[in-house]
Picture 1 (tube, rainbow, N blue to C red):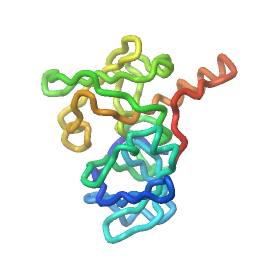
Picture 2: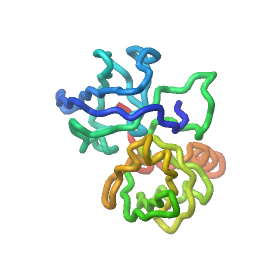
Picture 3: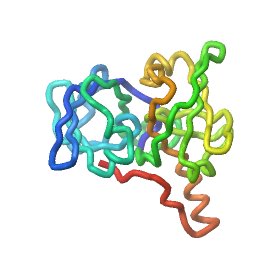
Picture 4: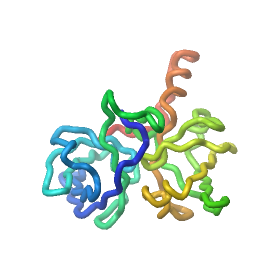
Length: 207
């Protein structure tokens, strides 16, 4: 589990194709890599991945075919900046919200505009996910915990403050960019309790 509070941005320095799967080397940069060991989970742009090897200040992760096809990882290449968050511990401050790292779908930025000192993003998602997103609820975009400002059919909007724009990759986003989206897991549990089932949606199995 994660909190959606990004601890560092890293950079993909190498991508290898391994029998259809992907293998990525990520320069962890300012992340406290001493607290990460082989076998640990790390959220990379909101995708829960397992560290398979450490190399100096870099981490190797494997990404399955399913995750490549269901998240933005299929389009990532060397040089791409990514958001990093190690898995939470019992002593971790829950500054964001509970994030599983199980991406539900990719969304697309359809508008970006300044809003005072912040930036407001409008993000379009698959229609069947819209019911899980509510005004003032929580949403995870590329691993970042955000508050939903409003919803309109299959589009939701969020405001990103200057600190988050500078300390995550969200400041790099432009119109037509794809992002990983994970809805609040509580919404899925509520649906299960009420209806007896949960829509599979466009969710991704993890690497």
